[in-house]
Length: 315
Image (tube, rainbow, N blue to C red; front, side, top):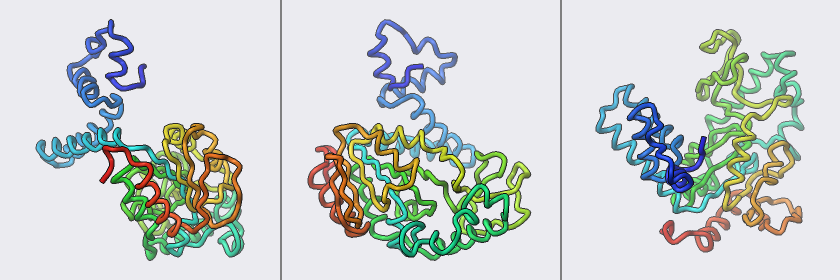
């Protein structure tokens, strides 16, 4: 199946009346609308279905149409903005008061990670694992996003920003960022121990012994533990391959496979790393900002707005 936009398809195969190949008028209409907007058909369908689902839940047709058109307009405006992929880690949340896991004074210096955050630990002592994650969830409820989070959310006004985060907290979302990929899961969600795609939002509530997922199996935190694969890595690779600018903040790039994502950045893409550590990087594309997250993001925001805006995205 052709994976580009409808306009690209029509240019690639001008001799083929591919609208006629659709089984229904609805499918052909979707393809035509995608062609007009010059976005992938699948993207158009995802947005359209999102609002059809809302309509089933009670919104009227006019509201649905207005919301749909607004979302499509946002989608098309993104084409005029440079794509920034942000890779964030524990350091950005540390300035909000969340303990970092690694390094001096980190969580893993105080407790055995294999007992509270590993696949093996879950089967040896699930009660201890649940207790640890319940405490982290309650702690998160009291913590607020910091200025670095808000700056990243603000940059969506000028750039097509996608955040790939190693963090399991929800501080990016609470600051207003709208496009995120959580590599290691989300602590405010739970899932079935059998069907990993059966995920439910639990907010800051506890998971207690005997709590069941809709499929009848026990609930577990929706986080990736030591000894488990990181299922979102392929999606993250695709995002880094598309990046025009990469920002790394709050991570020492020591945790694999996540740290290996930088290998997929195109050769001409600048990489801005915000890290208080004085490490030197050999890659000539890297611009190092030796500061913590908040101060570093202030500096980077100013630089990005002065040097990387397209004419159409300038305020």
